[in-house]
Amino acid sequence: MTESLVTNEEKLVLINDRIKTLQYFLYEVELGLAEENAGSSPSPEKISDLNDQKADLESKIDAMKAKKAIIV
Image 1 (cartoon, rainbow, N blue to C red):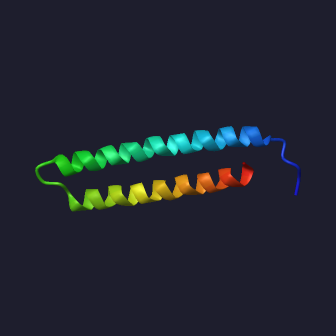
Image 2: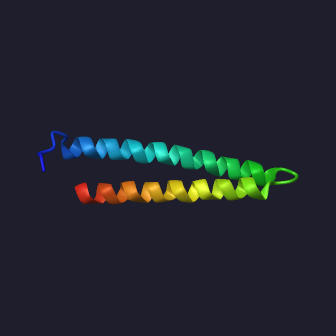
């Protein structure tokens, strides 16, 4: 394995940026869920899709946090 030219500090900046981006996406999905549930006839399919997206984003955030914990 070759030596990385990226410092641990740089790696942490990249990971934190990725986590922040994923959290923005997660918040967008949460807003979508609130909006869909507030409607007069919420779509079960859309709610299910948004819940799937939410779970996926939460898993990705957890993966980035685990990666970060290895570096710290």
